[in-house]
Image (tube, rainbow, N blue to C red; front, side):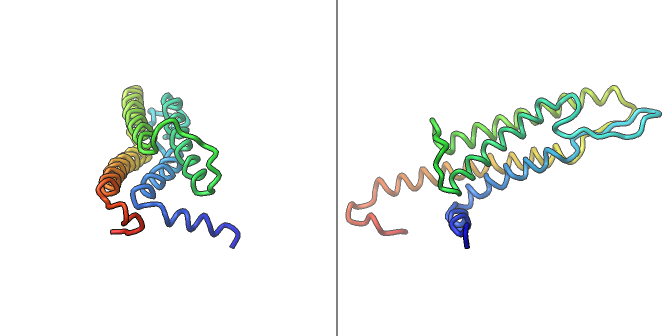
Length: 167
């Protein structure tokens, strides 16, 4: 197998990092789902996704932030180590997740206010799925940070002769 190391590297990720990666991949997919649907009296129903309508810039930034995190993970999975971070991984994941949640709430507000111009309008499932995906990623980031702190504390109190021992 030519890319067996990818499978091995993915399996070596802990559950929390896998959850962060999956939440950002899902966000990339959910950006293409309908975020807003509206219709006027004599105009057929139309939809906006993250890349169309009045919130296109916000949706594009949500997409690009998730793309950045996925590219970072791919860099680690391919073992190329081309991306050097000036901060910890957890800081990147937390900043990306928090910023995306803020942007999604802003898009929600923009689309909700645009809906007043139409006879029938509503937010669609794409924006809700994107929001839930990012909340799950943020929770996984928090849990990963707690796991890292626990590992550091155990390493601090481990006896010097027991370096190879796993608990």
